[in-house]
Length: 157
Image (cartoon, rainbow, N blue to C red; front, side, top):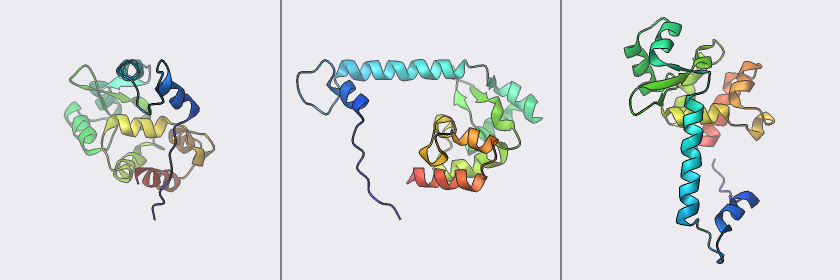
């Protein structure tokens, strides 16, 4: 059962929204929106260039498969791939670890998405329900896949 909650902006969000504005508008200015979008794009570039991100060819070699199969797995939500330079994908190499790999497809179904950024964000974002751990770290430290999938299901609704 879904319980409606009131998500009021945090102090940081409120300050961001009001910074440089003499009004009490709840909306960000065009300048603030552009700055936020630039910071998101910067984060994505940095994340794709991180040492744990590999190409589809590298992923195929790691998984003992082909690039075509890896691309099909990405499309189906069986593995995480983020679009790289308008074609091709980058993939976090840790997803092929035995503790993570079997959880990915059920996780995509629980979240209702095969989008690589959404899957990566879920696995790498600290969760209060996991005492501040990320779902990825929790899995690596022995949390049951069922608990992670329950968290994903709750987050999806």
